Image 1: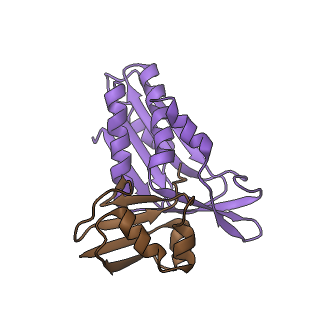
Image 2: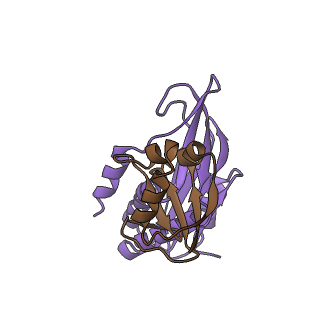
Image 3: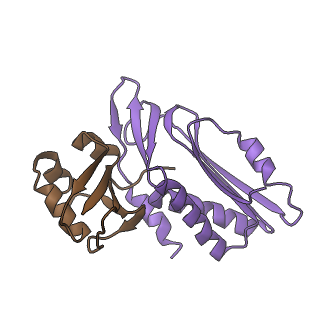
Length: 152
Length: 83
């Protein structure tokens, strides 16, 4: 089994199966997961769907680099990052991060770190599609930049 | 020398293209940006002063002083918004 994996895909993923996949290592006492979902408001109200674009090649590299950085800070046995691209309707999962460690503190911290850096360093872009059919690119948030400050 | 340029998200829409091959003498990312701004229109406005965008050379983020070499892939894109 590949312990550290990164996937960028259009298809839905099965969060339960992904968590289960990292839950069979006898050295792991803790598995933490985070799911990011399409919600009905963002930069504007009445969001019906997101269109996700990425930079193939660089995205996978950036995600592997972020995992490497997490492994230098915490003791991790395994980690998975799955990020979807394409058309994602309201309520569907966008991203999944799973971390497995001997201890919960490392698993929690690493999962949060992976998400914080994914949001500021991995080349994905969201376009919000509203219920009236109009669409616009989401603006980067200063709060996401601040979120990575606490890890430095 | 020849560069492959890639544009993403809002910049791809503004420029009306996702990629192009460019023959240029620009020695650095800053010189390349200057050359692109001189095209005017959306190039001048999107890559102008005070605009937020990022540049990657061969799929790694770089600053304006990064040097260019023949065959480099240079991507220009807005700040990222995934997750």
